[in-house]
Length: 210
Image (cartoon, rainbow, N blue to C red; front, side, top):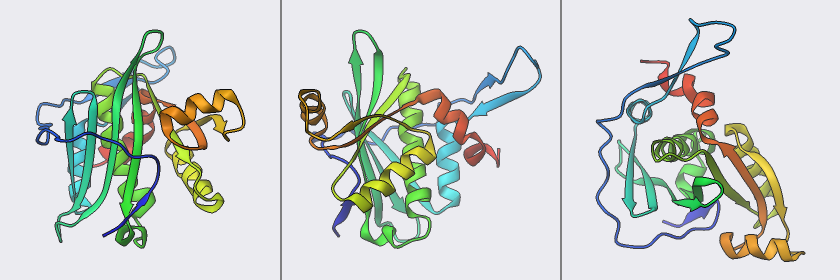
C-alpha cells in the first residue's frame, strides 16, 4: 500500500526492537506558581499516550537506532500499518538537543478516515514529542514540505493546531534557503515548537482518563 508523504523521509536500517515504556512516570509542572501553589497540570507520560491510543484501537511502537527513531502505528483490529514517523535527536553546540522530525506518513486508507490527520497523526506526534522530552530536547523542529499548495496549507494548519509556529519560509530563492534545503531535502515552511509546551498543550487529551 502506498503512503502519502507529509515531509521528507530518511532513516537507516536495521532498527533495534521496540523500546519498552513501562518505566515511564508522570511528571507535574506548576501553572502560574506565583498565583497559586495548588493548581498543577500533569504532563502525559509515555504510558498515558500508549494507553490512550489503545482506547482508539491503535498500537504505537517506538524503535531507535543511535540518534534515529521510528514510530509505527498499527490497527489493533486488522494489524495493518496505519502510519509511520521518523526523525532523530540532533545536538547543536549553542542549542543543546533538538528533536528533528523528519517525516510523518499516513496510508491512503487512513487518509480517508475522519480521525486520520487530527487523530492518528496526533498520537504519533505525541509519542515523538514525549520521546524527545525524555531525551532532554527543548525544541522540536520540522519542515512542512510544499509539494502542492493545497496539501501544504493542510500541513501547516495541522502543525499549528498541535502547537508549532512558523519560523521561516524556505522557497529556494536565496543562499539561506539552500542550507535549509540541504537539511530537509525540499522547500516548505520551517516550524518549531517548545517540547514541554506541547506536552502541556496535549495533557487533557492523554490524561483525561487517568
